[in-house]
Length: 259
Ligand SMILES: [Mg+2]
Image 1: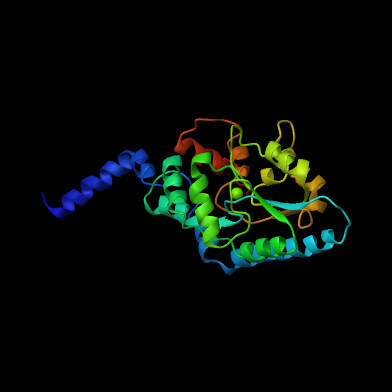
Image 2 (image 1 turned 180 degrees about the vertical axis):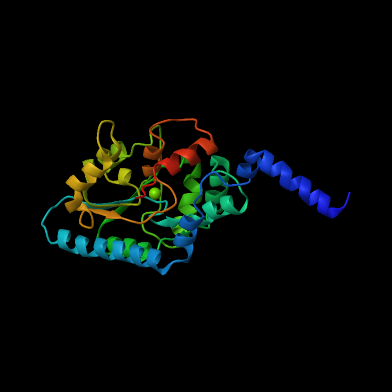
């Protein structure tokens, strides 16, 4: 068979069975999101902006007299550590997100820091705050997480201060645990669930809640940009679970606002 005929058959095969073409695509179409995080100066500038606001706000809050020990609560992923190489690797290998691959990445303990995070956390420690890391990483990722944070000499990188997901992903209970003994001055995260449960609560509209609590952002709630993933995606799928990659892609497209 001539080479031309082989090409022709491959072309016919893929046009006849579009699913074959779709199967070659990563399930989450986020190439631009990963590139923006890895390559744009704007991403870095926004991170510095967030941590500059955090430091400014911290200085203001420290002027208040309160005898309780003080703390700042930070999320880890896309707040302190940059995991975009994990998403990038998924794209390069045309695969969907999987927990096994995620753990393989975190197990390397090689994530870089989010711009501005190390200097802010070290500053917070230098003025007497304890840092608590409230993350939904699995407890099996604890050792590698400590190793990764310690590589950058980040304060309080120990099991007493790193509160990983025990049974529920809801972070409220872990935040309350810190609040029992400390005055929490700031919450820092890339996901609205890092600040309060109200944003993704049944019966509440996320936009309404963000509007209602808008005055807290940049003051008590410090938000880092994360274009790659987050709880916001679940609303695209209207609470439906077990959707195929193709069904997810279809629903995402339906949510786009045009004119
Ligand atoms: Mg996060």
